[in-house]
Length: 202
Image 1 (cartoon, helix red, strand yellow):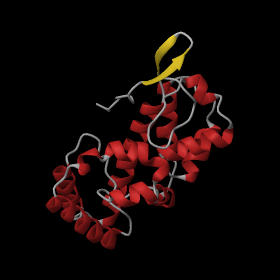
Image 2 (cartoon, rainbow, N blue to C red):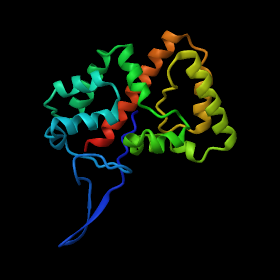
Image 3 (spheres, rainbow, N blue to C red):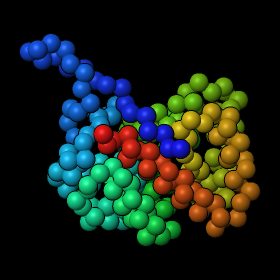
Image 4 (tube, one colour):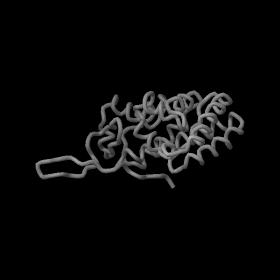
C-alpha cells in the first residue's frame, strides 16, 4: 500500500486566534511542504504548475504531458494521468528524471544541489540521517560501483526503508543486467512520483 502520510499541519495567527491550516499557498516551501486542493492545483499558472510537477518527477516530457492532461478532477485522476504519462516516456526521459535525484545517503548534495526537492527527498531518506558511519560508507561505495556499472544513479523509493535495507537492495540490484535494472529504476521512480503527488494534494 502506498504511503499517504501528509505533512504536519502549520499554524498561523488570525484575528480569531491561532488556527491550524493545511492550505497556505499552492506551492512548496523550501524546507517543508504545503498541501493543496485539487482545485488549487488545477488553477496554478502554467509556470508554477511546471515547477511543482518537476519536484515530483524530473522528466521534462512527463511534466509537459501532465500539463497537457488538464483539467485535473481528483487525486485519483492525477495519479492515473501521472502513470499514463510515465508509461509513454523513454529511456532518455527516465535518465533525466534520475539525474534530478540526490544519491541515496548523499546528504551534502541534498542540502546544496537538490534544494528544490529537499522537502521530499529529506523525508524519504530520513533513515539515513541516523545511520552508522559503516552503513553510510557502504552506501557511498555502493553508489560509486552502481553508477560505474549502469551509467545512472541508484534509484529506490526509500520511504519506510532503513539505511541497512537500502544497502541490501543496492547490493542485490547491482547484479542485474542493465536493461532489467533500468526498468526497475524507472518503476521505482514512478513510485517516488506517486508518493510525492499524494503528499501534495489534499
